[in-house]
Length: 312
Ligand SMILES: [Fe+2]
Image 1 (tube, rainbow, N blue to C red):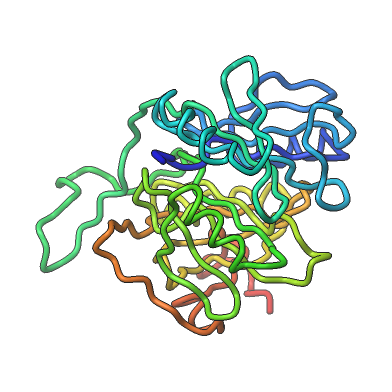
Image 2 (image 1 turned 60 degrees about the horizontal axis):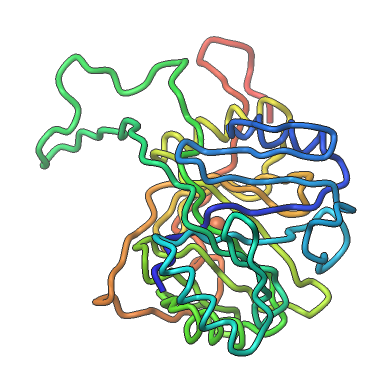
């Protein structure tokens, strides 16, 4: 199964305007905006789609609106779609859209879909770091940052589900769709990547009581830790409130900063996630604060020496 990652997440919401404001402030590019919803794209075309919660074209909700209604994966080719249709069609209904995309439900009850990927090639600058002891990355006289530097989401990274049976979910994505478990929190759930991509994870399952089932958060990759901090600072200045971060996760090594959102889940910025192949041996660890992050900071208002006294 040549699944190459997430193409889009579709949400049913009750406040289209608030969600539009949130996703635009987050840095996504909007299109097809109306009172009924819209599409919000990163640099590579991966996207968040919002629709009114009562939109009859959406798969059924797992809980109250707002909520995640469908997870859309991208595959490399039509042949990959046929392989998925053959596999999942053995024991469940697989509906085929006019555009060729496949729609069905996973073993946990989440609506999932597959399409020939909408990802388009793009180029964007890397954060060049000069470290004593290593060859310079950033040339002499080239500045590292500027006040107006761009820090916007580049590609849809991962989604995290609250699930009633993480082992059942892991078995479905492993045995039926070829996902690989890269690491696990014991008694909580696995980080998983599809075989067609090398990111540490695009799916993380968290065992919870059944009534909590749904999306905990999603995130897009930023270009660097600097971009996570800059985009998060700008997002916060627009009034959105921090939930967790900024910091750096241990499993996956990704920078993170989570915010509250009107989409029914948290919304994260991440950057610089580990990449793995079949040579990687999955780790297992108990879930703890130390195992969740290497470090964690709290953002503060800007301040300068000689300015107004520090607020405490
Ligand atoms: Fe995350």
